[in-house]
Image 1 (cartoon, rainbow, N blue to C red):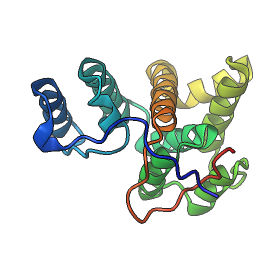
Image 2 (cartoon, rainbow, N blue to C red):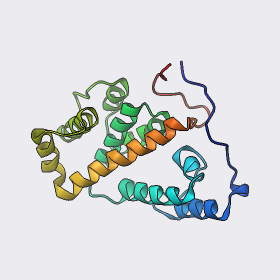
Image 3 (tube, helix red, strand yellow):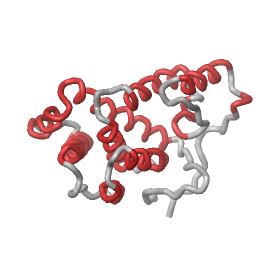
Image 4 (cartoon, rainbow, N blue to C red):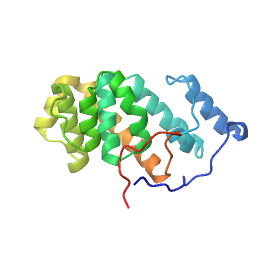
Length: 192
């Protein structure tokens, strides 16, 4: 049964934004995303615009400007969303991952908390890396080397950045109980 609790921050309207909040909305709109939605993490960022500006810039860089191929980046975001049971993050990124070439069966496996055994080797390496990092707060030499062979120095650094940023986004979404867009069903059972 989904958790039907209300968001923990007051809803804002674009017409009532302060100058700092409008500047943040415009920065998001004019950045690599090309749009601003008063939803998800961006609705939270507006409540702390200086923080929001830094966070959205980092997020824009990690999502659009790294050497990590978009398929692997979106795959890593899904592993993170599933780890944190971040409903909004999953709802936004599962279709993006499929569009970037992540197989539907792989997406279903990740959503269910299963290892995606039929996924390509590069995705399996990313999966093992993320799961090990989240569970043990470290990665073994073998796990590191598998990913490093695929992504190289910069890509491995950027992958850790992607995992960290989307963990931040997941914590923000979960802490402030950000709702899914109208009509979307939760991907995960909410904890009691």
